[in-house]
Amino acid sequence: MDKPLVDHIYTADPSAHVFEGKIYVYPSHDRETDIKFNDNGDQYDMVDYHVLSLEDVGKRPATDHGVALSAQDIPWVSKQTWAPDALQNPHTKKYQLYFPARDKEGIFRIGVATSDKPEGPFKPEPEPIKGSFSIDPCSFVDDDESRSAYLYFGGIWGGQLQCWSQSVDGTMSFDESRSGPQEPSGPNVLALFAKVGKLQPPNLLEFSPPPQDIQILDPKTMKPLLADDHDRRFFEAPWMHKHQGKYYFSYSTGDTHNICYSVGESPLGPFVFGGTILKEEHVTGWTTHHSIVEVPRGKLTGEDEKASGSRWYLFYHDCELSKGVDHLRNVKVREVMYDNDGNISLA
Ligand code: FUB
Image (tube, helix red, strand yellow):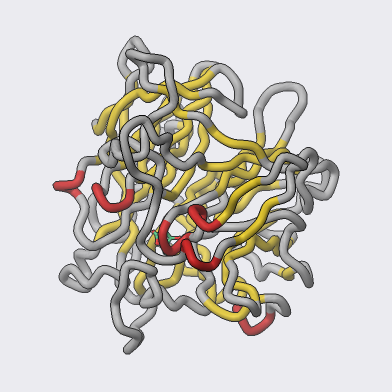
């Protein structure tokens, strides 16, 4: 299973879901560029999205459904269509692709595009989501009675999260001078928080109320993680999934290349740090980004149709195909398991 899902294009940042009896993967579509590498991520100069699907998690290659959305068709976008995610709207049954990109002022915002089919093509809204900022949206629909939908987002350095601050009246302001590879640091200085906003039903095109901070607590002190704790602090790539009634918020630590998870009782947190699923030694290149998805056992897991229960998979990327070029990545998948206490590890 640890072979790239496809090898005819470069893909990264995989958001996987089971829709209509298939596994659909919403990745970034990496491309070659002569832009100079830097820690602001300028070399990640993507211009469109492809959607992949699998009828059996182990089958290679996955089906590439072609271009599902192009930057040139999104009125507010200037460049860099980064890591997307998708949900099926429980009210309208339509599929909605959430994606970050730079607006005409060079500020990352989050947009939405809609389709009748999980593979697209997706029709973009003319404006980004009001009050959206930074990168890496993860869309999550709770399976409880409320069917509430949430958008998790944020990424520091190139993702600009460190540029934003909130005033007492709740207004968010952007400080360009904090762009680039910088973040808070120092004794007892808190790490930056990822964000989560509830999406307003039935269209799920705006936040209501405005997004709030996601707190990740140290299990020993039950206090938020500190800024200099680079092995555990949130950097980018937020992901939410639910297992046995608990909410799992997972994310990348960026420069230290870990995929970590934390666990909470509510989709809004707080979350208590749980551990590291994928460690630096498994990751080549500068970034790491993932999703975790439950797949019913049977055809999709390559097992007998009558098999019961489900398996869990981690979709992630590395740079095997390009032999380590950090902005030319490929998506892979491997199984993960839970122990009796709900701790996650690679299978
Ligand atoms: O693919 C561009 C950016 O790199 C993503 O938005 C981040 O999560 C990182 O993977």
